[in-house]
Length: 165
Image (cartoon, rainbow, N blue to C red; front, side, top):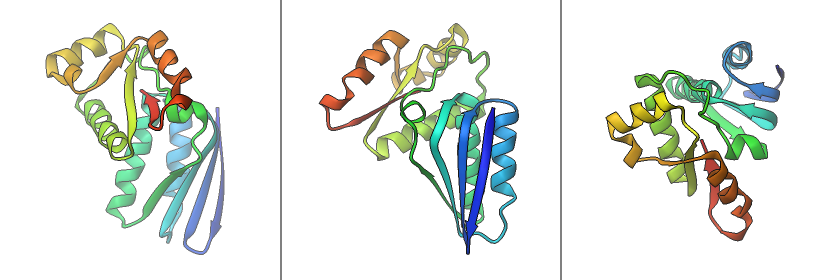
């Protein structure tokens, strides 16, 4: 479940998310909250209390970024919780279309620009097959969940930040 609290001051809206940004009602709740803000210059999405972010949630955030860009609105994601900034598990992803691949590539570019290592963790057999057939298995760092946990547990020993998707 996702709950949203919106505070608006002038032309800045702060959207505080508490719970899970996952496929279904959570995504619709977030999208409705952001899209309902009129006459804003900046929308800040506070992720500090987000417990889970799945591939659907990630796609929704990228979609909101595109919506904001098309309207000359700055969209800022702030205070990602430990989970939201580091682990997005793909093991339950059953389908992956061109839109999903585009979202992953956009995330890869975003991560690279911020010196964040992006890992695709535990992709399902179907997702692995799609990545192999498209040649994207050579673009992404793909690992099993156990390896990602090892990398993440050692993240304080390095200057780079790590993220797993």
